[in-house]
Length: 138
Image 1 (cartoon, rainbow, N blue to C red):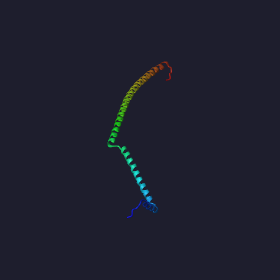
Image 2: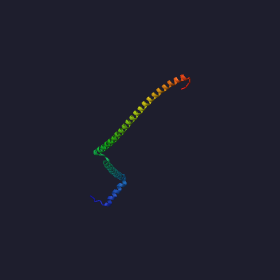
Image 3: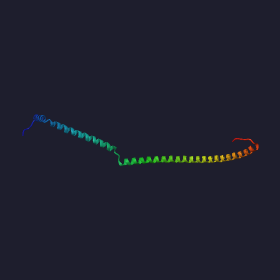
Image 4: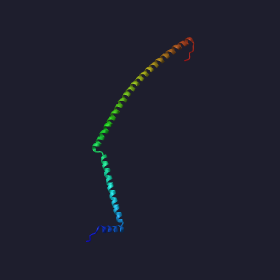
């Protein structure tokens, strides 16, 4: 077998590349696809790493649920306090309503008395009109 020197090998490669330039394109394409694959793989690894960092564990979810429950309990306590205050206000309004009802009853009683006094005055004036003969328009 003949020992090939470096110059002869270069010539042979040059001749093959000149005769079939698609070989170079295929090599570039394969190398490019390999680079794209490697870059894609690296990006995916980074994204998965970030997702893994961002992903919640069961303990994280339990802690979040406990926190939300605590906030709801706090809100419920505040609403219960507000409800108690409204109940107090309602009782005060009921007291005020009772007082107004009592005042209304007193006014009704006073109206009845005034009407009775008016009837008595009309009766007494009527007697006076008959005795004196004077006409009073009411």
